Length: 145
Image 1 (spheres, rainbow, N blue to C red):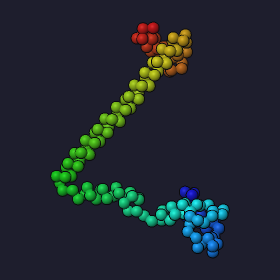
Image 2 (image 1 turned 180 degrees about the vertical axis):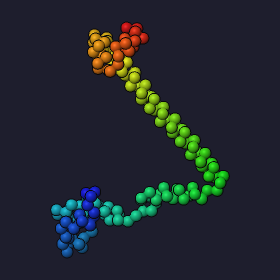
Image 3 (image 1 turned 45 degrees about the vertical axis):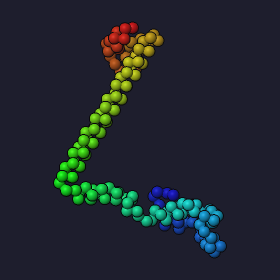
Image 4 (image 1 turned 120 degrees about the vertical axis):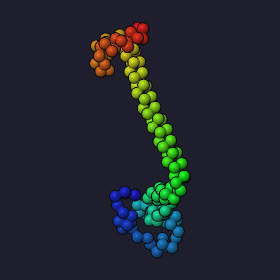
């Protein structure tokens, strides 16, 4: 189903059902040039109705309303747990980013060492990696090669 077109505008281009087809259940109607299968028709009908517990962020609104009814002691506990959660999440996110950076650095060092072992000149390695010749020579010396 096209996201830009409304259900009604798309339905208007579909051939009308014959009298025989109207008397049959939707899953038994043959799909003669229509754009939707019977299952898609049922899904489009379900889209017309709002489930207040799952649609349009109502679940978040209900949670916010529940939090708003907390007494001061419960609200303080909630705020404390929320602070703890955010701190923990920030630690994990920061650790993940630092780990990615360390991995990239190790991979770059490995590439420099493999290139040096293959006989590639340090000037060429410098142009490829963007590191200075001094940095490359320092990495090679630290590796003992």
